[in-house]
Length: 457
Image 1 (cartoon, rainbow, N blue to C red):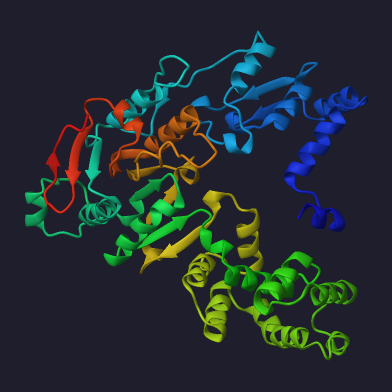
Image 2 (image 1 turned 90 degrees about the vertical axis):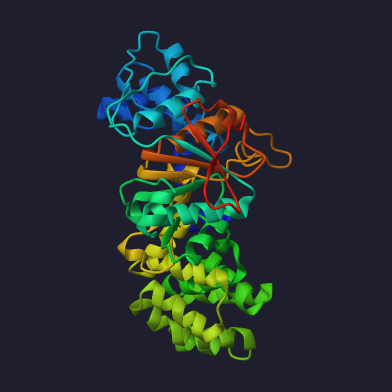
């Protein structure tokens, strides 16, 4: 990919940062920093806790000889260590600028008091001293921790509970279960998990109960060869010079050998269009490339006129469907043209990608997303699901978990809830659940229909 970008003279965001960093560290770096500071005498940096080392060096170079610098952020929401972010950036700034003025924002207008108390009890186990957040929202339901017998029971509970919360239960059953609450819209509710894989079972249970949902973030279906081949083919129609897209299409859809792929790439670069009699003549006698151009002739006008959803639907009708292509279709519904879909898939951050699931999603749907994808968002009611050992903190072979960052991620998830927060876990529990305060209501669920209060620890 890097070689292809260089060949086409393209720069990614990281490339631009690296080049500027190198220029500022060169002999003429001070003069460049002065010129930038003269043009932009004030710098304001939001989400400062997310910056990486290169970005921090740029800030330091800009402010080395004066200038007004203002940064805002929350070290307790530093959750992108895997991208190079360092929660110590505030501490480093204070050490390098001893006279820096620090302003603490302690008034909270998002979450109910019980939710804030729970979040503060958890994050207080990280270094940094006591945190202060003063709630300004009315009291809501108690925070609940629900223990399930297994992951399936956990997903079933979430689906049934959402049904009750949205009015999908008769009044007698609601009274028997003791659920006296305001009926919520589907769009008021979010289910958050550490990984997308944990959300799959929840999605199946919601669909079983005809509960519409939107899945947000990158998913495994984008790695499916059929999806990558289809996307590469359609992209090559829009941008014939995109060698990587053309290579994906020819290799994944036609199992094309490398020499023919190179021939097709060279011809596209030379002619700049796929709608050419000369191109047809150039590939004559090469069966795979003839088949490729035959398909191109059919799809070239379609990609210019049809919506992405219609394109994927027709692709499935012509060449067969699969769960991965179905998910691509349900992602395509949010885009008006193929360029928009392509940019979202290639350039979009996790929170930018959405996929519909279930019926009537346009009129309101439950949001399913990872904890990373939920950062910056808020919902009246939140389920924090999959809080089991090995998942929170997330453990993976050869990569020990950073307990402090995982706790910050848990804190971010807790504070996405405005009015109601329900935590769910199947044995064995995440160690973070031992850090919850006493007022949290602890329940069990499984084959029994009525939840039973039980002290877990």
